[in-house]
Amino acid sequence: MSQKTDEPLRVTREKLLSRAADLRDRLYRVRADLARRVEPLPRDAPDAAIAQENDEVLAAIEAATLSELAHLDGALERMNDGLYGICESCATPIDPARLEVVPYSSRCSRCAKAA
Image 1 (cartoon, rainbow, N blue to C red):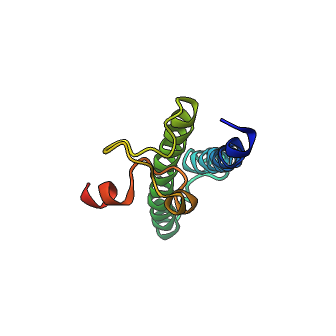
Image 2 (spheres, helix red, strand yellow; image 1 turned 60 degrees about the horizontal axis):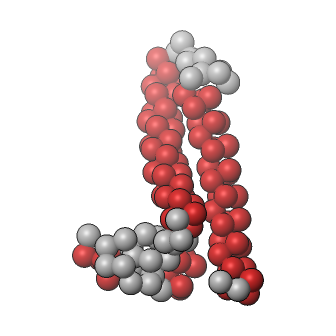
């Protein structure tokens, strides 16, 4: 591969790594909040209920963050294996426009719709 064709992949790798770092920071903060490292659960029942509802939201954020991190890690692994941009279902190239929008896509649009 030429240096010219490697450049878009390098830029995408940097974007994925940057996004993963941001997500790991978010995950640290969410887990700190859930562990009450920032502030303990209020003793007042209504305030405690609100805090517990907030915990449910934080747990959902944590799950979404972990899911996105797994997708990013998968994309980085596919890059390392030389399989980035190839549909894992049908082995055809994934449309570059799709990868621009969702850089960790592992399936082409057709296979993603069928799944």
